[in-house]
Amino acid sequence: MRHMLVSILTPSLNQREWLADNLQSVARQSYAQIEHVVMDGGSVDGSVEVLAAHSRPGLIWVSEPDAGQSHALNKALAASAGEIVGWINADDGYVDRRAVELAANCFKRRPDVDVVYGHSLLVGPTNTVLQVLWAPPYSHALSGYVTPFFQPAVFFRRTVLAAGFVDESLDYVMDFDLWRRLRETATFQRIPIYVGLERHQPGRKVYSAAYRTERAAYFQTNLPERDQWRFRGMRMTYAAFERGSGIAASILAERDIEPAVDLRWPPLFRLWRTQLALHRNELPVT
Image (cartoon, rainbow, N blue to C red; front, side, top):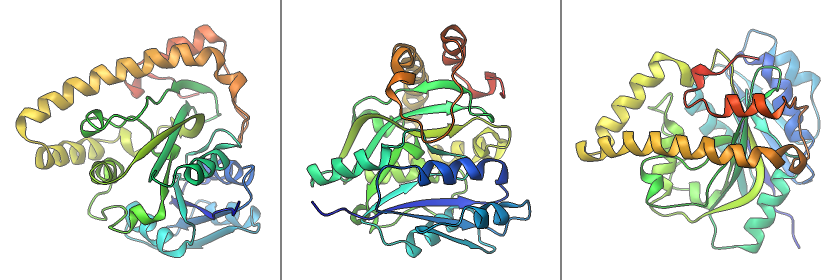
């Protein structure tokens, strides 16, 4: 069976502290046909030196000024050639070394599927596991209000992005905007594996006041008033469901993962304590 090329896109700006893990998580993948396209926005923190030190076949990187994360992502997509596309930010990565292979196999088996996703882990700065982010089977109705997956755990068929990737007018909620557009035409499929690694660290954009402002404005514009109340209720309900499901999944998670990065697993009682935090700002930075 022919191996499809998979393109992994990474926008980066002054993310040296996390960049090595990002690059390693791709380099350790069991799937051979991967190109990793990193668009660095002209970092001055040593990121360029990290990229140069990790030079290998399949790693393509450019460091030059850009107009922000969304612009960098669209540049990376234009510079890539894969039939399958993944997106991991510089402080994210892949959890399991089989992630790309199993996603590619799903696309091969299911030519009707446009988007493949899996479960994720939330980790701290030193790769201590803080939460198991269990992704449910896809629900079209639910996806209008909450995202049943996390961005680094998603792969796209390139053809489904032909109508446009991320909106460059958005700096923070470009991912949710993409999910809302894709849900109108795309077919989604979950794979039962831990795919994405999300990084809990103080500099994350989603912890900023600017993120909250843009998100509020986006939903004010794109959701009718009656749906905004439903969105708030469903978001809180889903967060509680996700954390509770993750408690059950965490019992076997360490056993089920073939790590693509060096993870630190806390005692189960401590993991369950952080698992129950509904707001990320309640979590320790470890």
